[in-house]
Image (tube, rainbow over the protein chains, first blue to last red):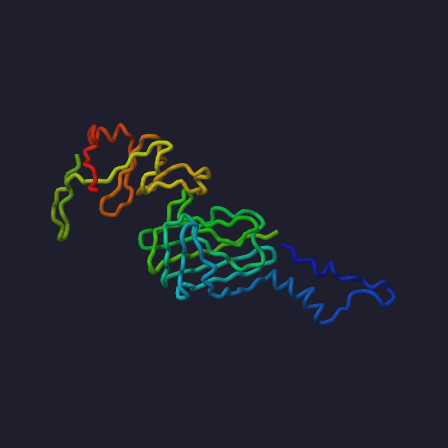
Length: 171
Length: 99
């Protein structure tokens, strides 16, 4: 996978007069070389807990901060890796929704639909491997119990587990 | 023919009685039975009426009956009208629920 060449493409050559062209200094090196390389090799970025990230297709999904074990992403050139571990703590699911949503505060949503990604879950009354999906252009991670849309059981401040690791591309 | 497996440990033998269940018939265009869903899901992009029962999903056909556990309220089985009559009798073997 090629390094992002946009900063390099933006450079302007000198025309031989010594009076034109892009200035090459530490800032330019950082922006032209280092930043694209950093993006290529990745590195985890933690997302802080925000209850507004969580919602449901019917009613509400409210985990507390203690359930927010891991939520982070790594940009690897044009791929993004996401790790989610929303586990234990106290979850309240007010109805019996088909979809639970985690809306990620990311600048780069997927450019194509991401369907059929597996994740693990346990709630009192339900355990198994669910289906995770994202719609092109949207930052919302959709969690289904299964492809047929079995509803999530309502919860009243119980310990629940949702664990996912996945990639998507944004080019 | 297989013989009964003897009880193990502190197990004792019991005889199960016929269970009372709650039943509700689905008719096309009628109200949706308790426990049925018409929400759009990946496998049901048109929101077909269906019931999630242990071990699977039953797509509702006109006249089907949805049987639910009296204690948990959860749907346990979907059967045809013909099977319902055969198992529960022409009147369904039920009594009207108290008002």
